[in-house]
Image (tube, rainbow, N blue to C red; front, top):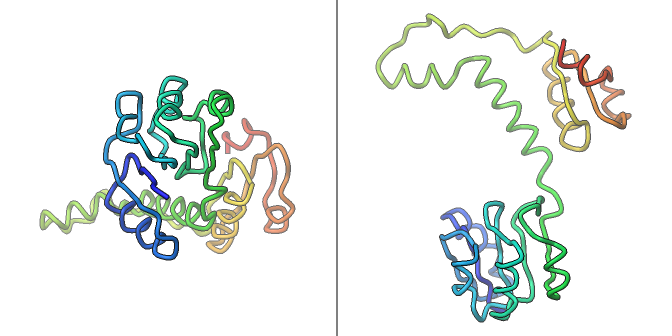
Length: 197
């Protein structure tokens, strides 16, 4: 099976090529975004693999269907860039990533907090310029801080577990309370209350 992969980056090539070793699909990587004027690149490809910045509106999907595409594979959990109604009318199947690693997303959020708190980016740039002064680089302990979590699904729960491990007080907002977050000591508040803390 031939697969046209749009908006491809070097890391897409690396990981998709490795994942394809057991399937032996014919993968063709295109750097341009998929939109109406790039649909001719997909001619003859029954499968098109897209990412979040590709434009799969009615005109693009119609052109893809006319070129023989039958399946749209999204390399993302979100699919708001795909006109699902038009895809259904054209007989195109749309599939997506069911979820990302909640741990990876939560750990990334924690990494960003630590980077901001400890001013790592500023410190890194100073050291590159042979400036080892500590002025303006002092952070504070995350331990004992209050952390607000908006959304306590799987990702929010993983984030809560990590921040609990740091010794933080957890505040949470979600339309449904997650019992695992409550077990960690999270206090649920309304969104305005949480943001005011």
